Amino acid sequence: MFQELLCKEEELKRAALQQKSHEESLRQREHALLQWERDVFERELSLLIYQMNTEKPNVKKRKGTFKKNKLKVKDGHCISRPI
Image (cartoon, helix red, strand yellow):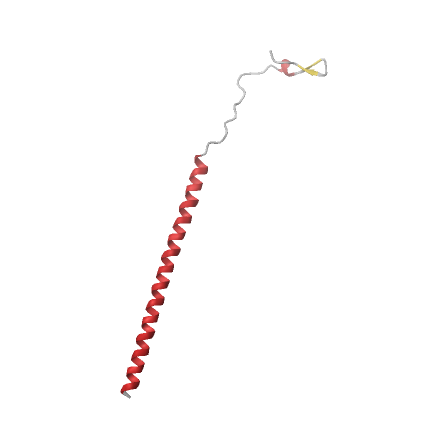
């Protein structure tokens, strides 16, 4: 009977040790996943910031007024040239 109790106790200790090592490996895996998520988030954030800071091409707009008679077609087939 005493031998059975010692055997049971040893089995329980082994099971507890195995469970503890499994918990530790899960904790390490969780830590690695959190670190990976942080890295991905930082990369995505830096890309968004980069895209926001890149300058869009500036299109120069026409300044001044244009007279309609200079834009009209002369002689029916030729557009007037700039002065």
